[in-house]
Amino acid sequence: MSVNQIAYWRNWINNRQDIPMTEDGYIIRYIIANQYSNTWVKRWVCCTTQKNLYAFIKYVLLPSIIISKNMGLKDGEVYIDVCEYNETLGILEHAGQEGYEKAVEDYVRWFEEVDNLEEKDAALSEIIEVLSKVSSEIDFRKGLFVEINLYEDISFVGRSLIKEYEEDDMVEDLEDMMGLSCKEIEDLFDDIRDNKFMLRRISTLLNERLY
Image (cartoon, rainbow, N blue to C red; front, side):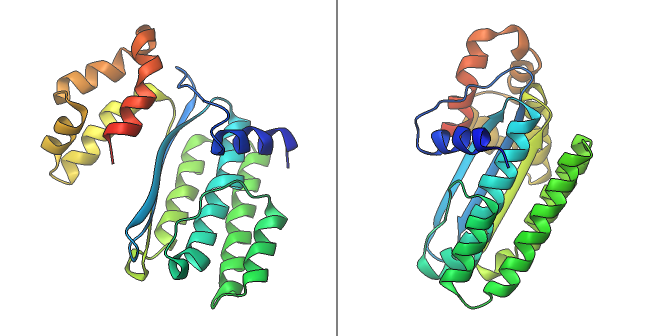
């Protein structure tokens, strides 16, 4: 565990630190939604280093997902915070909600899988696979919806979004939300490394316009 990384993400969660998009930072898009209470958290986040990326997954995403599943559904909330490994286990065990033993088991397994990826300096595709596995293990029919997307850098986002919305037959919705045509979306992200003005604004554009 890195104390510096915990503090880094805690400052971000508490809105004391803004993390701008960088041209070569990893990009995470996450949605955690409590379908019973119609509450959710969603965000596009730039992880500027690999250490940032792993810390965000281990100390923000994984605890937030498992606590939202085991406790948040009953409380009508979505939990999003920074939690160390033992702190997360303590929260689950102290609350003692129905099914907490399975929640602990899932969380420990997820954490160890991500920790192993970090230790062996895994390829990005392996990290994406584990995040997809975590999302798929959360049964949305039981009230919690989780989706996590990881992009190598900001330039990969445009074409990935278009493909995603095409598969759902919702391209017009994407164009309406972005206020751009598909061709303009492609050009925006393909050229963003050379467009410092848009690079500074892209986080606001994604977080405020896309759901």
